[in-house]
Image (cartoon, rainbow, N blue to C red; front, side, top):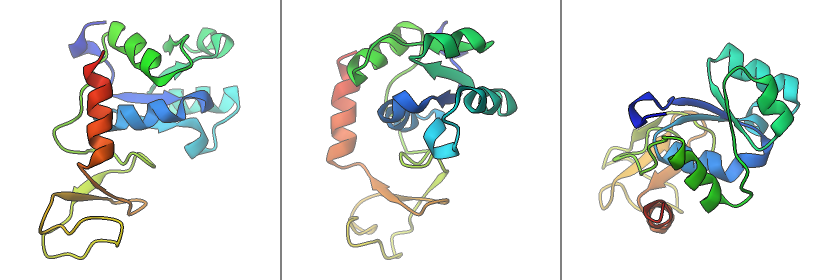
Length: 154
């Protein structure tokens, strides 16, 4: 599928938790089955259908049951990302985070005068975002750079 036709709403089954984080960092609205209590095949299919999400899975039987799915064969994150890139997914970091890497909630930039948790840099020194759902804080640090380096190899 061409890049401009790649879906923005995805659901990943229980085998693809690490991939969910990468896709969220690339700007995709990515539900992860285990985050949504959808581990069983019927539950993940219902989630995909009710929220109009494209299913991404490594499970051949599950993919065969879904009207719209992408079947991955690689176990490692690099291979999974290459398969998605080959399928037309745009895989580069979003200019600013849009989805929480932990829970997929929306993120908002923290005002420079707001305090941040001890684990996060000060918002007056660096851009920091906060998830509106789980309140996790994010910034473009070493993890961001590591993911960017991985994506550049695709």
